[in-house]
Image 1 (cartoon, rainbow, N blue to C red):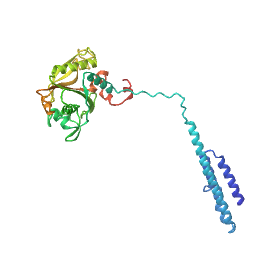
Image 2: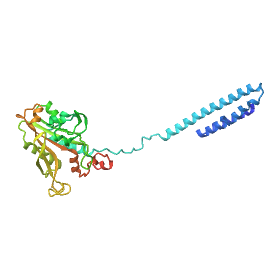
Image 3: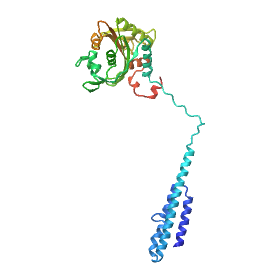
Image 4: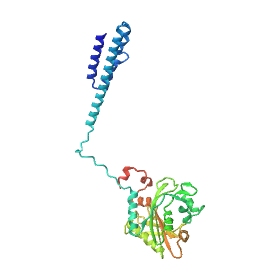
Amino acid sequence: MKLRLKQILESALSDIRNASSKEALESARVRYLGKKGELTSILRGMGSLSAEERPAMGQIANEVRAAIEKALEEAAAAIERHAFDARMERETIDVTVPGKKPAPGKKHPLNIVLDELCDIFTGMGFSIAEGPEVELDYYNFEALNIPKNHPARDTQDTFYINDNIVLRTQTSPMQIRTMEKQKPPIRIIAPGRVFRSDAVDANHSPVFHQIEGLVVDKGVTMGDLKGTLEIFAKKLYGEDTRVRFRPHHFPFTEPSAEMDMMCFKCQGEGCRLCKGEGWIEILGCGMVHPRVLKTCGIDPDVYSGFAFGIGLERIVMRRYKIDDMRLLFENDARFLSQF
């Protein structure tokens, strides 16, 4: 039995040295140390030995098992190191190889046009005012001459945090906040994201962008409003752009108007784009209501002003002839890469 144990040890060490993979190593372990392994069979036969032989053979068998287990551990570690070194060699980065040029990012069409609008108005002396998207009901409605239960709230039914806090439905609250903190003369635009519970379709979204404008000073007239907006339209769409003003109603301006632009496709003759009217509405405007000025601590007998609100998405759609507003929010790279 002693000779047999020696043969098993030599055979096992030879198989372990020749094992080049984890699978081959596991096969060697099972062959010698498994339940039906050669060494296990020897250990099971220890009962046939005499009482004098059994301790000596048992010690040798244990030494053989320990030697085989140690050899298995060392071989497993060597195979792991070899696999790691091979992987490192395969994954080595050759810094001399030209890299792949990443696809350059582009501005979103909303940002392209917004930046242009800001440039136009800052060029006319306006500054940019920004404020919170989560707004107090007072600033979003009441200070703009839209008290609770006013019919004008029906068209701006929005997302309420509680009875006094809403997601703003317009950027007009920045006009109130500015007039509270700053004495005239005031000349600002307030671009930003707004929220209304509109159903999603080709022309509506519950999230969209507005650019509100405000001018307050002594002697400001409707003529100043019209002249400012005509310059804006010509800067944006070209010197041959024609606009018109139609009477309208907004609670926070008096008188109020909507400004239309002659359809750039049919030049006023009527087509599908302008729904046969020859004109396309692009913004609402008017003279600031005296009650709004008084609420902000500005004397309406001394100062007057005008305000306007532009829907950014509508401007972008008309600029790029986009027929579905949802394309601006879906983040489809195939669509956005065109701009």
